[in-house]
Image (tube, rainbow, N blue to C red; front, side):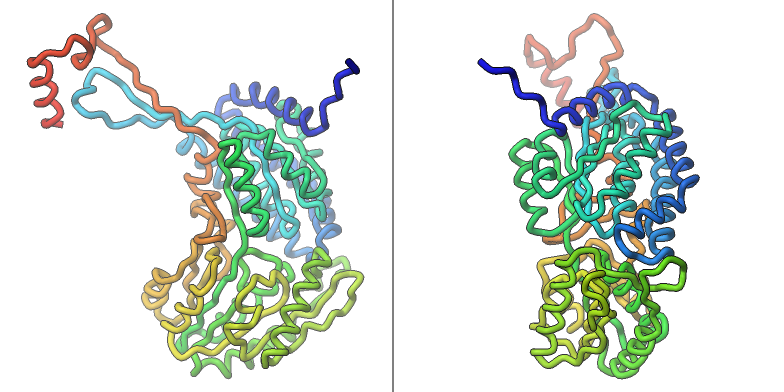
Length: 473
């Protein structure tokens, strides 16, 4: 018999993670909170370096790398470290009279090793935003970033290791392609995946085989519904930022705009003007609003969707490829869009904004719901009551009334979608407790030596007594 094969790097990382987690879970919650806050202070001390790494990998403007990645992560750190004690502490359970001599509570037990499979569009905010609550809950983290943006994750791993606040191996990065992500699921106790619907289904199947929980945040097709009485200025600016921020590569970004017909001509005119004023550059500095796409596949998708819209009669403004090698494409507006166009049916995930006139808000809501996706949606009107009424009819997990794409940083709100946009919820109390298993504990306090009345032997007197007690309860 030959020598045993050496364990794979992934197996070794998983073993180190379990050893580190066994030590970490013994830290008090207050100690974990201090460590996470210390890590964040360390990251703030190298904020400009972090922004530089993000920009090099994604080509996004400095403002977006700083505010929408680094600073937004700070909002989540503040929320989770502030609320962790309330959410994760033992919770006393109310008891019926039949258990008058017992004490009951619910304890939150860490799951163990949490696997994060994260995308390329937000290479710091998403993995760090998921790692923080996982760590606070007492878990270790194995992070598999996109193969398109590994350096940001490796930078995080370096700062995590060198800050000296955590057991060695508590957070580790696993680089590589889809195969490494699939293999990761075999070595963790829970998996969080952010990405496409197709890959999300594969992750769910693999997790189900191991009977481990999977939280999936998948695609979105954000319908923006603009009523005839909406503030034209705010609605247009929201549409432009909601679509072209991050070069359109946001899961909660606006993908479709439905405008009531009386406002449609003015809306389109202002939309063209606002879009034309956007500054686009890949150069260093702050003089840019829009950057580039991250992967060649996204450029192919943008071009396919625009070609389809033109072929089906839409007016397409912009969309020229400025530099194919650097994946630089001009923001595009698709006017007079119709429901059968790909831009209205599929997530483009790029700088393409289709606009369609509708006769009524009811028509807009119906069209908005004609999708297998249901992550985010928004309604724009001068009457918030009308907006909130329409929001109740929208099949989406995240809804804004005169607001767009704010949910992710609002840590107290559950973040997740309906339909095929995913399973489970990030953030909020729910998104912190999900990193634990609840353990229900009952402690018999007195009398120390007496049996409970429902134990053997059974008799009629006991039955009558218990019947009266349970009725009184």
